[in-house]
Image 1 (cartoon, rainbow over the protein chains, first blue to last red):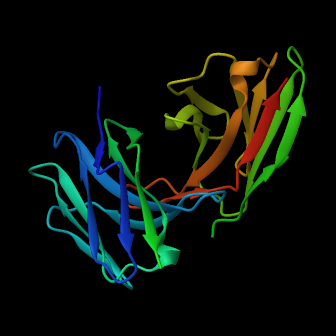
Image 2 (tube, rainbow over the protein chains, first blue to last red):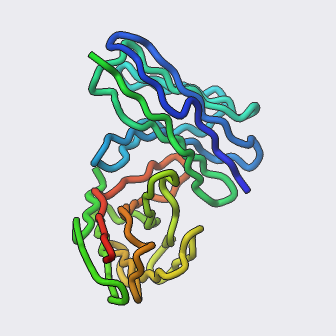
Image 3 (tube, helix red, strand yellow):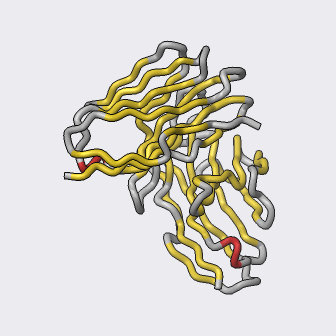
Length: 110
Length: 113
């Protein structure tokens, strides 16, 4: 069974704080890693898709790194804003399947 | 946006009735998926399709069937709805390459009374 673990489960920060989350996965048969941002009452929205070891992606204040050899990815948010409040989902493509993590719920207080 | 439209957005139905949810996409994506979202479980895969008339079961497929007669439409049917199928259902489409993201619809909230 392929297990995708995200930590922490939830996080509460103040506006302006920088934060990061982790996605851990088995490194065998890895094809791709996706990060999604999921706001309450909306649908998940793709942030990044990464496939190569050492990949780094950036979108505004959000960036992500990928280490396929040790099986983890970090998602960073610089200078968190209240509108960053959402659940951040990690999804792994491996063994011809997409496996979802349970997400990290971020709350940013003004 | 890959233009994923789910219908209906909300539905209330009685136990034992058949229900069909529709997912329509406008980007000619090869793969389509149906997920359900429940508290404490995140998103769980019900069924998926890798092409017209090509479908396969996901992890929670019991009580559900799907059909894909056209690239753009993926239908999810509950043959005889049960209260345990009360959930929010999300459809997603994907172009099919390893580095293509999932594009999600806005979800259908189904309540089975």
